[in-house]
Image 1 (tube, rainbow, N blue to C red):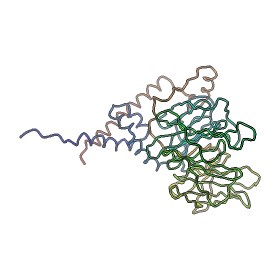
Image 2: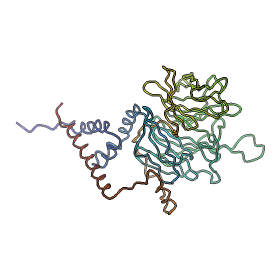
Image 3: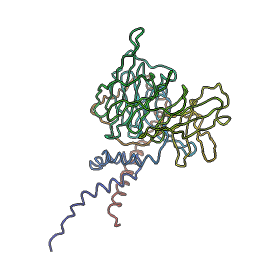
Image 4: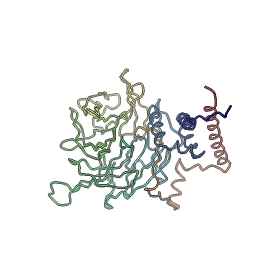
Length: 420
């Protein structure tokens, strides 16, 4: 009897089994497993694995908040999260006074000379030349907190090819009595690190308007004598107008992505405090009112207060999580018609989902590491850098990492080798 022929499918099955096991591991373990072998690394850094992992993580949605610190240290997640009620909050070490934009777990920080893109889950950070006018400065006030100088910024993901893109627009009047502004518009492809020009949008939007990315398009809300919504399809790279909901808005209206849906949150003061939330069907571009929450004597009572409210997430039970401009976090329970305060001091940035998508290394520029006594003094007071640990703790930490990788390896071998 001749030797048994090898199963030609055995080589193809093994990576699939590995992928299924990896998908069930926590993110920290996945990051450590990348160092075990080239095969494991190729699986864990593949686009397919990143997409599958993110789709699973969407059911475990968290809230991203800023751990406000101006020490100048690198932006990264704090080691531990915190629960407010049943909402898990992860904290990003950053200067909360500086503008930022988020999209599916990635964070973009526009700066004077650089565009910084950070993946907090993997700690990858990339810098790209901003191309901004060096005369621009960061402004103050509601509309100036989201982008520098006279620029309107946007950050989002192309839903067809998965590429992340940064958009900038400038509307400037360079002469007195100039009726139409001079428009400059460009797009940065994070994969290539290159800027390219875009055709100008059909109308002007507010300088510093906060952008929102929903279903592969970036949206901006323009509020002045009239209000408009401008959209940019990131795949076609074309602007288009968006129909408006059949309601009036206020200057404090907030536009956000709520559970993959474009919504407007309108805080009304008279005749009573009410939070109205309108949602748009992305495909039909039709609006409907999805929440009308009375805030009188439950959240606010004094009508002269400058307050506005922004939804951030909907829980699995259908309860709405929202926050105000005073760093207070609330949850609305529609069935009981009840509002509970979860936190009195949380600087909410956005919903957060763990994303393992790798950021390209080649087109970016290295992040500078300032070396001076003032910088070292500031980070020594920071919670994230204040406990370097002894040499004993470092050895123990290294051994724990080795044991975790060994345990994961044994678990995978057992998963594959045990009979079904």
